[in-house]
Amino acid sequence: MFIGHFAPAIVAATHPRAPGLGTLFVAGQLVDFGFFGLALLGIENFRITPGITKMVPLDLYDMPYTHSLLGSAVWAAAFALLIWLFTRNRTGALIGGAVVLSHWFLDLLVHAPDLTLAGSPPKLGFALWNHPMIEMPLELGITFGALAFYILRTRAIAGISKYVLGLLALLLIAFQLINWFGPEPEAADTAMKLTALFAFSAATLLAWWVGRTRILKQT
Image (cartoon, rainbow, N blue to C red; front, side):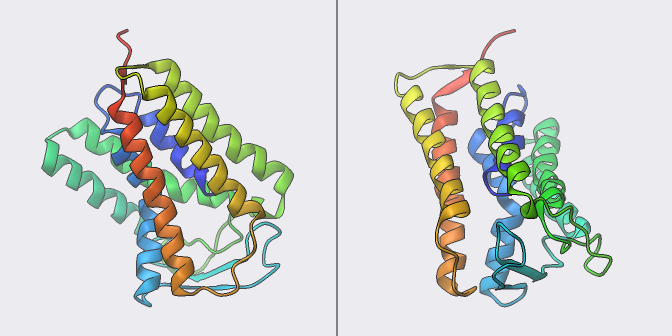
């Protein structure tokens, strides 16, 4: 799951007490921001193993602090606390934390069994990465279904809004196509880790811009 992690963020942004869309994009990928950051430091680890799943060659054998359910819950609680400290918005904090936690459950659908409850076996994962004809329409469907829902629930407050929305949609499609059909990485090296962090950051920045150009419709 890549751009599908942004779907809960996009839907959550339609709640009147939710944090901004950019903040929620951070929430949607916070676990992976953490994972690649910790991998750069050698605290969590992965390797490239061609064929480990049909779609993704990542052997995610060591990620107890980010991709265990307990670890994800800690990241979610910390993010919620941060939102509350800055905004005193309890509902917004809970929404942000829920989006962070959604990452683990979406990964559970697609990962080979490499997720844990608390960092040790059993390892869990329904492995939809081995079933491209299910995973690909599922990921596109939830992401762009969420984006359509967001567009219906909001209205533009700047003329540039439709162009920024279009850029966001194109960027998400481009990133996902590269993820699916681009050349496989040769190694889990620094360049690959930084590229992943750049992709998450670019999507977040554009989502922040979208959020600045739209507001919720009055109901």
